[in-house]
Image (cartoon, rainbow, N blue to C red):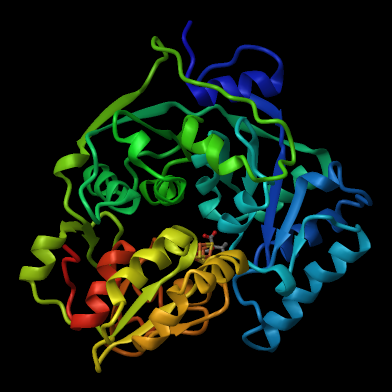
Length: 419
Ligand SMILES: CC(C)[C@H](C(=O)O)[C@@H](O)C(=O)O
Ligand code: SF4
């Protein structure tokens, strides 16, 4: 019987053929915690009486949400992870010296590899599926279980096949594709399912596009998102010192899917998700007609804080100025992205235009710090959630978009079509 990539990954991990719906106990290749969720996992780990991690090199802690510390509470919270990392001599502990948002940082470090089973105590752990891995978010105590045993239980998810056809137009990105999918099926349209992205569009999508798509699978309720390994994946991995040898799987032609979605990407305009749900998508053409004034433009997060995002922002901002009524905040996903963007001149262009560039952090994305919205303020943001109060005041509003839309809107002061 044909299998999906996800079924193949689990079959390989558990040593027998398994299919959607089966409950399996699988070993895990990488367990990921962050500054907010790891302290709870550490407490559960210690309360259990465990002394050693089952697989120390398969455990990463990334301090990213409130780093450098935004207040006393976050400073104290970070210390719990620092002390644990020191005590257990963790190799994969990422603090201020080598910082980045976990879902941008780990792929860059070669710590997540095609064919892996990955869990993280962060809902956007699904991002890593872009590398042809099974990757999903879990709770902190589930993480503790994996820290202690090296594995966890899973129900092998059914798969929704997303057929993407055609070459994307200029400024239509992975972000627009996933916003369109969520618009079509809703925020619970893929509950407990895998979204497998396939079709003639895939060879036109960079790894940065694929990470954005898989990142927001959770916003449709999906367990995971996945793109099969191809030449673009291989090229991304080529300069990395990989933690494991990649295992490359493709779905069989006769694999079983629970649903198929078809999107003609060549006809897709950039999509804007209006407040207060990622499923509230409208074409940018509609948004322009609606004359939506913005107070802040934010480019960053695990969805769109990668080099391609800073590049397109710099291209659009070059020789221009951010509108006098708008604040532009740009947060690179990792120090490496910041360094490359500096070398390529993107940071100078953004600062010359009047933008602020921050250190890598989750920061503004979750209304943490550095870019919190005040009462009634409106943001155009490249992040993944626009719930009530997500980026600050409960009366503020967040419109989700790609980085080209955010940069163009920063210049005009209204949601703008970069084309
Ligand atoms: C802090 C963390 C638990 C949370 C998540 O899981 O998604 C955060 O990253 C977010 O985006 O809201
Ligand atoms: S960047 Fe935003 S969405 Fe991503 S992990 Fe951080 S807070 Fe969550």
